[in-house]
Image 1: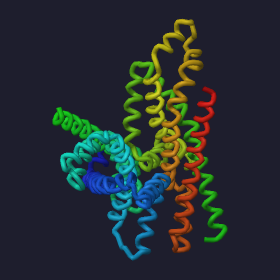
Image 2: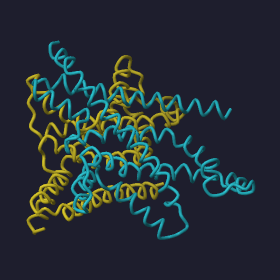
Image 3: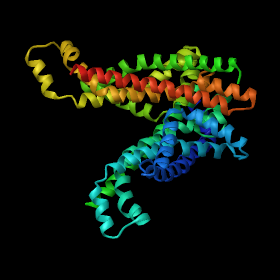
Image 4: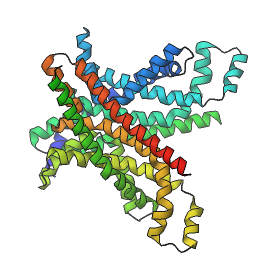
Length: 218
Length: 212
């Protein structure tokens, strides 16, 4: 019980860690989704070199564990003369890594679109950006929504790796609390419960969003 | 990179493979057991499995490893890094495997089960001869997919000090001040391991298809 009291007394640090994790999630999820939306059409492009390049990127990310890619960004970019804080190196790694997965699941949903819909849009004079924004993306996003939700959970789980490059996210804060007060069980259990809470919020949010779009269409 | 550096990464690869294989060998049947508990609607335990899978889906491997490695000694159970890593990896993969098995069980045609019942097969015979061969076939792609994810989750064991591919590559980079070459070697090794798994899956599927 007194272990839980210690946890409660450290709530400011824990909250800071939780906020860092959520911040990383929001920033990298938005970036990954945007980047994925750009790469998805490249995967299906008729220009061979572009499609090959995009496939190479997606395959490389799918073969590399996240930690390896994180090290690559964290140690590799400074070699190219780019200096980053640990936080931004972590956010970039999360975004670029998960963008490949986003691109693939968006491409899968995109291929499922009936071609008649796009032809009809062409006939109505839609093309380029307008076609993408008004006709293609809305159904692609709604049908890919459950998969995007899964990928968000993956981002949350990957973000725990950032403790290794000393980003002050949830696991990192909990680890420093447990090593100061020698309360590993209470500390990490709290971390697991908080991660669970984040993921439940994502799942509930996804369901709400799905219901909203359904009502809009009906 | 010297020959010894390549050797140490290959040593790391052995650790990666050992941890992955151990957790897969333990986690796949364990996942099946959990799925069967839900499928058979065992009161109370069914609920426990639902909660377990939900928590594990949300729990980062790094956090789980730290929990098992640092917190179990509080209860008088000290594990070495390798058993702790296998325990954490198994706990994680069992939850995902449970979902794969459960999906296969839910798609299993009910009439076949009833037919087996009508010819008087016992419960264990029904499962062994009728249900299991078919859910294995249906679940295989999902299981292999989870295995590849499992291999990519193994670098997390670095937090409790085990040297596997990623950690070995990091060490070489830290010594030579050239991090890129060892990371490229590491990426090639991971790709090879994943490729072997995917090839194996295709081969099994082709053999099954030939069998009809």
